[in-house]
Image (cartoon, rainbow, N blue to C red; front, side, top):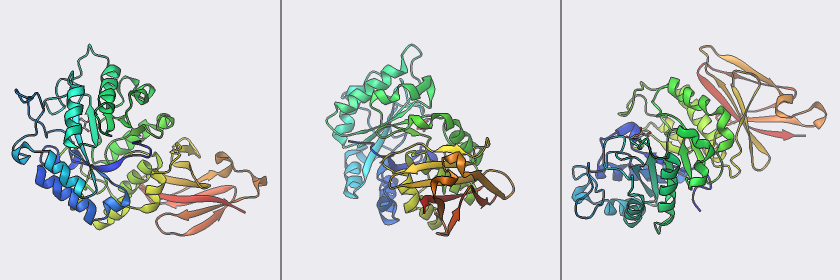
Length: 373
Ligand code: GLA
């Protein structure tokens, strides 16, 4: 069964937009293995929009890859290469009459395309929402691709991408989707990142095993070098906030940076074992905000009697953030102390009725919390 924990991988869109080819995809797969991303759990290499011809092949009806990007229009041998690295391959199509990049799309060809993808050995399909006919109910189109993928003869992870439209939270799980985009496209800027994660605060309970709320690709480590969308990059602290929040939300972890070139420091952040363990926690319980209306502190229950605690400071000054332990369910007569272990420094501290942490400006602190006698 697919999608038991949040999917992890890489997607071409943010860094490369339409500037990729088969050789680059191979280099990405190599780098995912050589630089430790695969060992950390990242498994899908996803080719986003712009791989496709403008029109279907007139003889076979197949959407073929562009010859300028894929030698001999051959996807199958690229898929074999990626599989040979122990990784999985993802591809993009769209529920509308054309993709967002105006290429041939899957509207009314869902069963045929799903079968072609399965024959190529594809393991993940991102299904976008551009140019969906107004007269068509999006729920039916998303269901149709869900059915087509299930019947394709291959286990294919279904990544629906309707950007939160048509109240997607209330019906997407029934389509068979394993993850679903809930927001507009992310840019590599902290304004956009915080807008996106704040927009899902009241929807966190709608993300669960086998169907996760996808708040779009991680921009960590892009540092303003992306081709798709605006974005001049983020500070180290802001990227730390992004990764900690994505892990806390049990959001799919899909890398948007150039994994060949991202710095070792950001690679280490993206491969942090404790943060990935929090993201992949099998119960995928939603975090809840505690300690005030500015939503700066979040707590998430994990398996094995652990909790993940995140303090976020989006202000321009360093701040001491605190909350009353009562607000997370602790009581004086429980007999427990609160033990915090800083995920980044390993430092351990103990607290009782007030928990606090000094947080630098535009940065966060994240802890594993336990209740101890
Ligand atoms: C939409 C999606 C993006 C990306 C582009 C490609 O905007 O939301 O994630 O796939 O299309 O054209």
